[in-house]
Image (cartoon, rainbow, N blue to C red; front, side, top):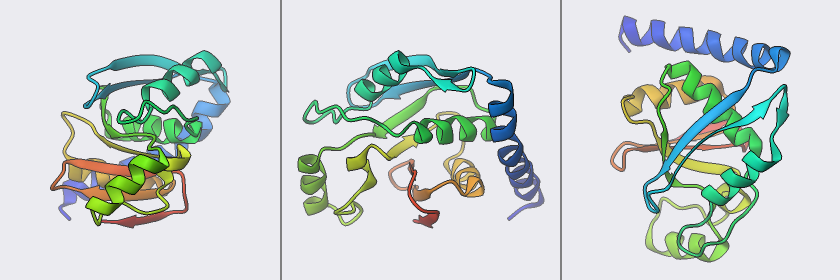
Length: 175
């Protein structure tokens, strides 16, 4: 790891420790933008204000994160949006996350699992607790390091497919 990478990572860790308390204490609005690579849909909205999730915004995000193969919609754990918000602040990139996979129905997950060794049988995608994303303009390796520094859940690294996986499960990593 270069000195520059180390300093950047150290700054990110410090920011990740400070950010939750600042965000909660001030009730600052939390905003996210997404682009779905499969449906070509875009969404940009404030999902939390004054320390409270906004039901209409969360519902819109749940629909956006639906299983694009089946159309099934599932509630997404808002903590996942908070992880993305923190990650975006850490890497200092206000752009839209490109979504590779949000919610997956059990049917979709089973099909993907049968055709790939990289899909867990009991994936947290099926519980609305996982997302596969990239952030254009940010090096995937840097995004991965920042996600690991958050220590907020699972982090998978898929450089050959150009995305990282984030989830709200126990802290672990692979890839």
